[in-house]
Amino acid sequence: MKTYQVNKFPASLSTVPWHTAELLTDFSYPWENEKAPKTTFRALWDSNYLYFKYDAVDKNIFTKPIDKNKEEINHHDRIELFFSTDAELSKYYCLEIDAIGQVMDFQSSHYRNLDFNWSWPNLVIESNLNDKGYTVSGKITISSLKQLKLLNDAAIITGLYRANCIKPGDLEEGFKWMSWIDPNTSEPDFHIPETFGKFVLTE
Image 1: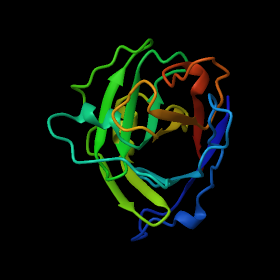
Image 2: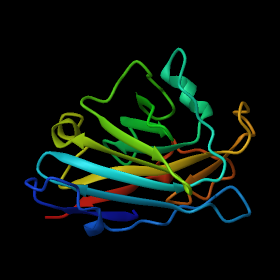
Image 3: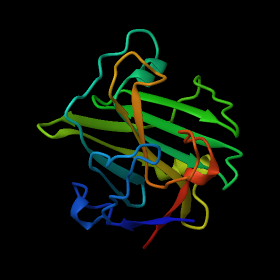
């Protein structure tokens, strides 16, 4: 299983030292015959939180304030993180965060038994648009990872993705899908074990 090392830093620091994080740049278009726009990911942890940060190059960002419910984020440019209790996705939890920091969070079990009534506890998100695209960062409590049985032996089974909107309003043909792992499937699908790797939290 592909791994990403999450470095630890002292909780006493007042700001997150992103320069000490491992830089992950392995995002690609598994289902397109072209190079994906650059996406970088970083993660760190301390005794209280798991921190993450995405930087996405995007020349044409589509997003808008949601009107009625969080599922509207399905239509937006966004980054995605999935965390699973096991390699078979018996239970997994999903964060999809658009370019202006709006969150679509839900829980699920294999295959695609999605529950949008669930919300991630004590989640903190920040985002900003810039001249190259957008940045999304956030922090998740270590206690919630333990409570949801996601943190086991200093490891978290994780999927990292990005949805690049190329045709707003068209959920079928309007997106190109990025993953840090190529699952070698014929159709885009993030909700399968083949797209998951592992975070390893180091001391």
